Image (tube, rainbow, N blue to C red; front, side):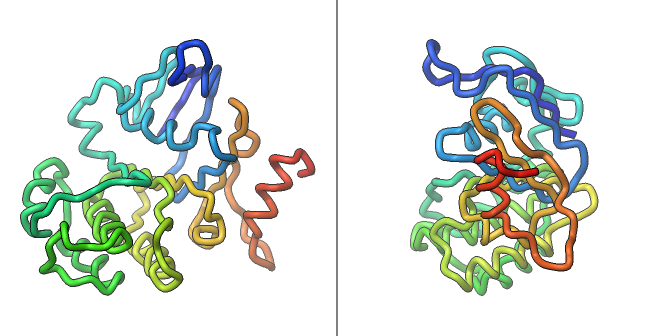
Length: 233
């Protein structure tokens, strides 16, 4: 369970990006975190990972505070940021370095995810394009087998086929105990993946509800516009 209670955080001490902000993700599943630019979506993911600390309030993941960086919690969390680089080493060497931090790391899942992305296993990370790096790093994230996986704009830089491969890789990597939080503006890339939708705006949670299957597919872009504009009934 993720519990965010009355937090305040700002990069400028005179202006808060989030103030008296509260949010809960009580169940496992795939959550979509949506909001306009500058509403703090990426910041929330960094706060959940303990890479940033709230200036007020509390954040708990399974009853533990991420800012304390306790190993028993860190081994259950993985962040895929929007932008990153990878070292100029082989994938196998990188996996050997990462694997000890995640007790349930599965090379079988890694190979399956890479296969979904049509990527080989014998590759050098420094020779990859940005799109290829995303595929490899997301495969490593899914193979980590953590209970919590946070992804920030995971489909940016992926072509149409790769986005379809991404959805398949995430679905194949899901378990009943896993919680995935996807922060994105590319709603059509993920709308068929999501179990739950959360829309934030100006320190407020406008919507935090499970997605209910209807006869026709839910248009998340229209839902977002209606919610932010206050036109949703």
